[in-house]
Image (tube, rainbow, N blue to C red):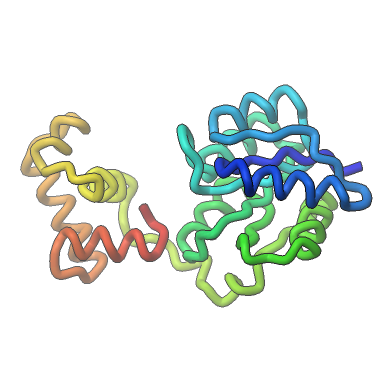
Length: 200
């Protein structure tokens, strides 16, 4: 029996997945979680074989959860199930330790098959993502990404400098560098490009 933990913040989707998987031969849902923090707590408690994990979660996003699970429970396999079809998200998820990446448009049979393949030690990439360039790595440094993320939430350069304990000049230079690396015309344009690629 493949023991699965379902992590999804939408209750209707979560209960639907649980009902779907409970009817599959050789698969049993041992628990559910609605946010990233609960996912880690439940995984630690239940020790599932596979965690079926959404990316867009409250408290802690699925990629951060995947990285923590890969470190804390190395025998647990992670299958991302998400609506995010951006190459950057795929690349980040795989780098964090996920064994599979499936879009929510997958059929029930594809989802169950992906769980079985991941549990057996395989890797599953949704066919719709295979040509998406998971190897398209962000040109931004970690600091530039962090600054763009803060800028995307409406923070001004002075606020970013205060948040990161940096000088205003350093923040402006790095934001300018990020704009240049993304071949953007403005900071708003740079944020839009980075979000479209899943780099933020």
